[in-house]
Image (tube, rainbow, N blue to C red; front, top):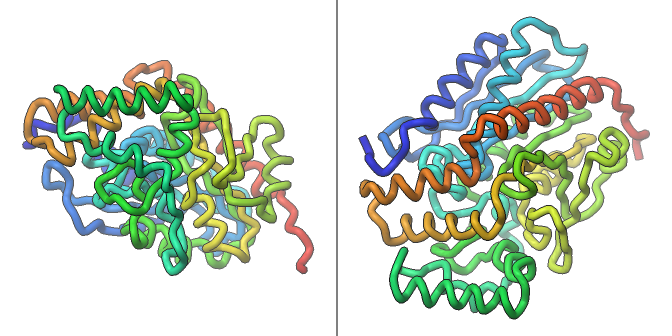
Length: 373
């Protein structure tokens, strides 16, 4: 047993609960084994559950674990919703696709990133093209590779960050850092140099399960940004997409539309300057589908606090001892930032997530397709 990691919740327990609920609901299951193991030498995989007619042309997709540690919220919601399907039928020509923990390594090791320190929401790019060049990050990179958790060098890194914040403001500094960078594999918000395992796996899942569909609504589940306990419903893309008007008409003022770009700004806490989001990958992979990519982002703690804990976790994986009790402390702090132990928080985010999904399930069967071009 690895003393540096909490035993509850765990990837293994979430996976067991998900599979149990999916089988009870009558789902068809597919497994995508990950090549690496978890902190307790456990098997890792992304699991996919399909409920309903395998030829259904209208599909509601629930995706958890893009940012590994955030997957505990997403997994809980998937499990609880699956449990409601044991006593009801889906509308005709409608199916539900559950993609459980697309970044299983990140969930198991209680990290936001994957096994290569890649932020998946910076990785869904066309790597045959020139990658984004985030020059603004270069002056801040040393903050995120500081070799001390405490001490004079850490104090210097803290002072450098504080100086930038005083001069430019927190939101400006974060818009630079969180935009993603593609030069430093040991840095924060690293987007990678090639498609990650989770990127390739998601594309395989989409090709297998959604290539035949006509209408799809996908909900990518996240935590961290926004007000505590408040789930934001968002649609994030690089530009307006064909089904955006349908999505906006369906959810009205509940839906926050975020179009990303180097000069984009947002008050949501979600990085508007970033590229490589999952939602854009969905649109690129399924151009023939009337697709609505959504994000449910559940607020937790202030951004400054989360940022500090992310830096501590970065230090741990660059320089620390993952078997040391200090590692357990850092992991518990990170877990709390993205999956608060507060039972009221968990109840509230599940309630709102269920409401959004139930509305989508009722609507997906009624959506009218646009006339062919």
